[in-house]
Amino acid sequence: MKVLVTGVAGQLGHDVMNELAKRGYEGIGSDIAESYNGIQDGTPVVSMPYVQMDITDKASVEKVLTEAGADVVIHCAAWTAVDLAEDEDKKDKVHAVNAEGTKNIAEVCKKLDSKMVYTSTDYVFNGQGEEPWQPDCKDYQPLNVYGQTKYEGELAVEELVEKFFTVRIAWVFGVNGKNFIKTMLRIGKERGAASVVDDQIGSPTYTYDLARLLVDMIQTDKYGRYHATNEGLCSWYEFACEIFRAAGMDVKVTPVHSDEYPAAKAKRPMNSRMSKEKLTENGFERLPEWKDAVARYLKEITW
Image (cartoon, rainbow, N blue to C red; front, side, top):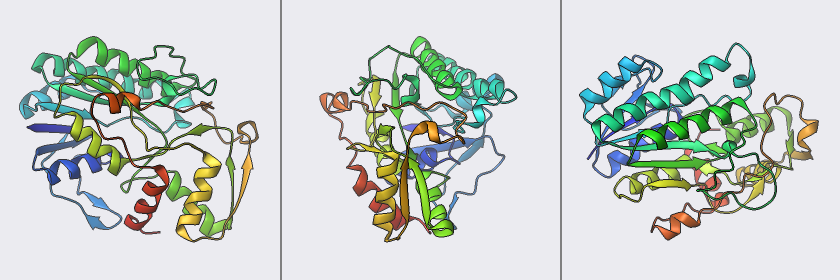
């Protein structure tokens, strides 16, 4: 099985390529840069075939995917700077990447009859209530530009691709890139204190664990929408407290409400609980408990 992975310079794409290599699958990495040396925290990762591809360039996408002849495309590339996406001069670019770029890939996957995995987000929902969102719920009401464009990407995939997996994730952290854990560790070192919102509830997602699930999925024909985060629930405040506890750092963490956090331009969902029962129903192994994931992650990074 040949698999093309977009966004390999990011957190998830990086780990997906490593997981494919571990299992002996032929993986082809792609990203917008001319080259990618696969360096994470100063440590080389597995060598891989790499091809430059701008997903917003329809002709480039068709050429690269057709020449690659991949059986599966795992689409990890995305605009993920949620607050920056709210800037007027960035909105067109965000739409081009998350919506049109995804549509470009979906159109070629349809033409080639390839499987497609699209990683989406809890931000497609309005974040109200306390019940877990179901993967096949269609009550989409994105609260921000990022969520809206990822939702439009979902629509394109489902309209065009027969063999699709839409996998919604949240609160992502991985070795290869910036994330909440790295930010907290830096702030803890610099200030010895942090203020973190305590009224948004969800589950973190470790890309190492998610990558294993995605590679499990592409070996099947159990297509459709899924939710995949690490098990257990927490607030961002509780997430931060666990990071410092696991890291053995004495940092004062102060809980604050979302409306007391003026730095955030984009409105966030308060309820990011997502049901993972569909994974169990279709025979997929769910991701480990989130505290376990944090502990393992801290052993993998330099901080």
